Amino acid sequence: MPLYMACLMKVSAVLISHPMELMRVNIQANAMNLSQHSLRHMIRLMAKHGLPGFYFGFSTAAMRVGIHTFTSFHLFYSLRDNKYVQMLQPFDTTTVHGFGSFGGGILATPFAKLSVIRQSDLTRTPFQRRNYKHFWNGLKCMYNKGGIGYLFHGWRINSLSSAAVALLYPPVYEVVIDKLALLNGSEGIVWVQELSAIAVSGSILTLIMTPVDGLATLILNDTKYEAVSYRRIYMRILKRHGYGGFFLGWRAALLGFLPHAILATAVHYIWWQYW
View: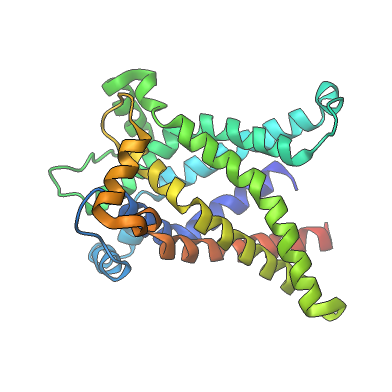
């Protein structure tokens, strides 16, 4: 699949799923508070602003996904076609994809940070909001506040999360597609099986990665840029909400993944059928 098609598909998926992602980010960003925002409360809060309320911070989210996809694909194809990398045995494109996603996560960190900040402003009081006009203005303000260090604060958790998803998805997908093939036999419709496999695999990974995504949201949304103890954050969440606090926002995350699954299946099927 060409790079432009992948970027277009990713941005289109963000456009469809952004309201659910907005709910997830705000629920996880408030994990340190005793009071939590439910999905119903978030929908009412977003509806107060009309349609723009459901797409609060969309431009920064789209930019983050575009930068991450462009960098990941470029690194993947560069490493995959490198003769020295191909000499490594056993050669595995999944590992190469993981390295590409890791690099994409690093480069996209400033945009991921800005995206979380813009989206989490929805549940802040007017006095506490950062109120960046657009992403270039936001990046400039963040740079003026703490320089490059603040822009890339949280790069470890952001890049490792991206790499983990890239590495875990293929084996999980293979197991799921094999199980579905056994259940449906050879008479199943191909695109239905693919959609089911993508939906189930993505849902499993979404649940697995929810604690990591929650931690990433808190780190990226932090207004400070000193060293942060991940253990201290997890202990505070555990103290306030119990083990359920690690899975705050999982419903919104699952709802947000479904458009990705449907769009990825449609684009993949149409591309291989007609191109």
